[in-house]
Image 1 (tube, rainbow, N blue to C red):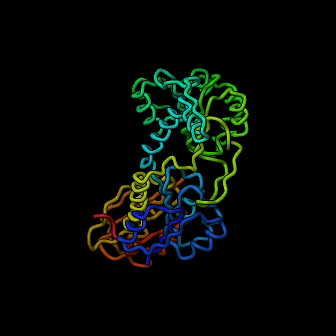
Image 2 (cartoon, rainbow, N blue to C red; image 1 turned 90 degrees about the vertical axis):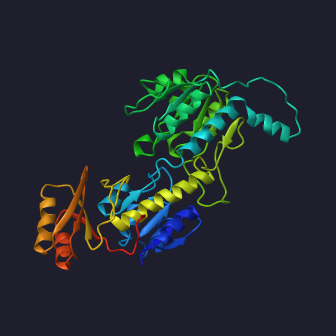
Length: 407
């Protein structure tokens, strides 16, 4: 029986998808620390997490049965991707499923901050009638600066233009500007013109601390700041100073360097109790629609990886899109270091075992190679042993797991 462990309140459709495929699923509501996770992974083939659980090299080394990790979110910086690949553990995420949810939250917060609705709301709850236009503006005609023009940044660009915002963006990679958006040559150039600055970059280590004192000081006086991407990107102590001295007119923050592991745990931040600041508990992608889509998408990737070896959209191993093998055929998947002669060695090992190759697909990405071979009959154990003995081999999987792919 294939076993899966799903943590951090992964949507029930994730569990149901795996159970329908014949997987035994255990769920837990919160995140686990390193020692807890190591203990929980004994005998587990599939792990599903969200953003809080850290899958470190030590965790991976202590889980020899683990075949794949599903990040039921966009980010994967909580997983040691290189170490996972080196150990033959494929990693999948959901790069598109919650894009719209994040964009809608950003738009809502941009409007709320620009109109200073947070302060109006607080005053009325305190029994104070403050009917004044002072400091409140329309978003139409203002300039939105998007830092990171990926899946979220591009969709935000389109929606923002529909509201009448002028859009400028900066990305370190070459990106096609959508609509009337303007690409800026540098982050500094963006900060010089943006009335609203919003971060939508990934969690690679090189981005840590990318927005600090110099960037806040460069922003236009009275600009608004949003971070719905990663908490460790931003110097929040400096943001607090700039809000208190009025240089930054408002901020919305959804992510923090340290976040509570479970709902109900205490939350501490230097950004609490500041004027015109919206704090949300990492819920940018947490709509029922997004979580449902993520649950289906990632669990299907995990299921199909075990069932047929498919690695489409994997973030750490070569991507192969595969159908199920012909009835009666055998399939073997070989993940290896990408060095010359591996494919010849694989075929030599198979032919020495007296089996006939029906089809073969090879994919490479950087230092890794992944070859999936369909055979006309049963695979002899001697051929498997020969493949495992090859020096470049990382992991060999004979795909006879009791997991059913989607028809």
